[in-house]
Each structure stands twice: as structure tokens, then as C-alpha cells.
Length: 182
Image 1 (cartoon, rainbow, N blue to C red):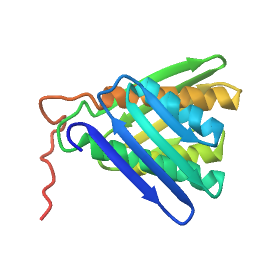
Image 2 (cartoon, rainbow, N blue to C red):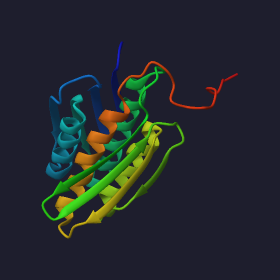
Image 3 (cartoon, rainbow, N blue to C red):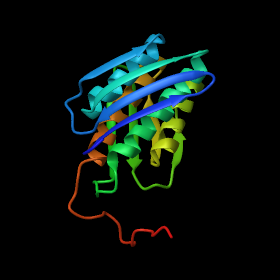
Image 4 (cartoon, helix red, strand yellow):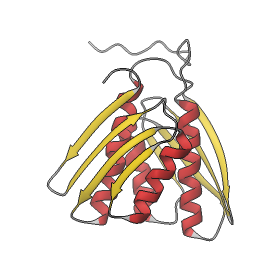
């Protein structure tokens, strides 16, 4: 695909996930997934990132579907970014009722994730997304007691931070030269 778009399909023995991602969209989404909480979180991510997203995910169990959805979305993000310079770094704080979450990202191709999340499955989602997208991701829960609110605030903050970090720039935001592959 051209521009800041990507289409990625991931098919394994356990899952089948496809994603079409447009970075310069308006937050329009169509998510087909039987896991309602995952569907809600992916829709939230797309809306808060202002990305257009069409996603379909199915598989043999919840863990595999959540993990492979994260990998597919991260891969689509990385592919859609291409090689053009972007703002690269962003931090967002998002409140949701009792919860306050902070997310910082750096699109630097040195994947790392330090994720504060009350649900191991969604902590795994965030780590898998970061690794496949090639970004550094930090999620800190400032406060909160309702797990749903904490996770949702984290997805909203991730969407806002990724939106800001993926905005185009005229030049690379680095003091290093770009690595050359031989």
C-alpha cells in the first residue's frame, strides 16, 4: 500500500488476524472479534489515535487472539510508518473515573516495554504491541482501583501518545546518523 497505510495478515495454527491501518485517518473503525473487551479496547485505541482501522481476529482461545491481535497491530503500525521522519516521542495522561494512567512512547526501533497493568493478559497485549511495532513503551498507573478503568485509560493514553508520536516531521529527531544495513 502507499502512503501511511498498511495491510497485515497473520495466520498461525491458533489464530487468523488481519488489519488494515491508515495513520492519517479520523478514528473510523470496524473491529470483528468475539472477545468483547478486546474489541472495545482496540476500538478505543483506534479512536484515540485517530487511526482508521479495519480488523478481524479469530482463534482457538482468548490468550492467542489477544496476543496475535497485538502483534498484527504493531506490525501494521511499523509498516505504515515507513522510513519518513516522525515526531517519535510522546507522553499522555488520561483519567477515567478512579483511574489515571500515563503512557510514554518512543518510536526508536529499540523495542522495550515496562507496563503497569492489573491484568496479565492485557499487559502481554501492550508488550507484544511494543515489540512488533519497534517502539519503547512505558505505562504507569498513577492511581485507580477498577481494573477495567485502568486498562481502558491505558489504551486511551496509548492511542493519544501514538497519534502524537506518528505525526510527520521534516527531519529525523535524533543526534545520531541513521544505521545503514549492508
